[in-house]
Length: 221
Image (cartoon, rainbow, N blue to C red):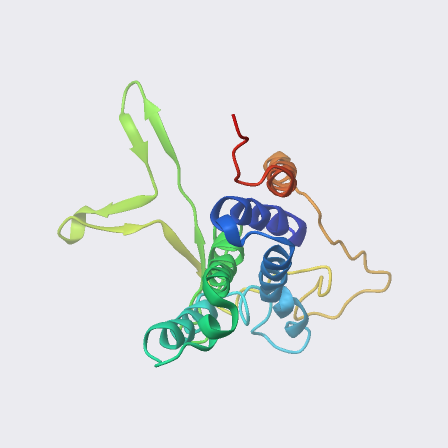
């Protein structure tokens, strides 16, 4: 599972490539705060079964935020966001919603699982699959599974791994969810676990730093 540090690097990479002229220290800081919010449920897990990767790590929250923002921008006579912060605020607001959903919730879904639709639907899902070219079998992929026994329909490889009654994600805050902690518990707060996470951390950090230094302006000839 990626640590917050890896989430930060990934969001920095997204910000450097997607924010365009709205990229600055303020928008980057706000996006880093937003990508931190889903992990609040690590503390909620201390007193609720709807804990880590459930209470705040779901797609319901960003969907509600997107609806509220859309109503403000497209249905109200005068948009609060546009009137106060202009085009800059609109772009950053939409980006922060993307950060919540893509930079954290869906990232967690492909790296261990998340309770995507809680509290509407209590089920942890993990997205796994592979795509490869075989000299004997041709293109082989498992991201979309074909249901030949039900009329040839298809569905994504989104696997259920249980609900809050059977799945509890451990964290450094709550290393033994639902159980009494032994004395001298070793609380582990991961930074990177695996080469790919280190790669994302280094690449995202360098890309973010380079965006501050270089910007989008081309040098004059």
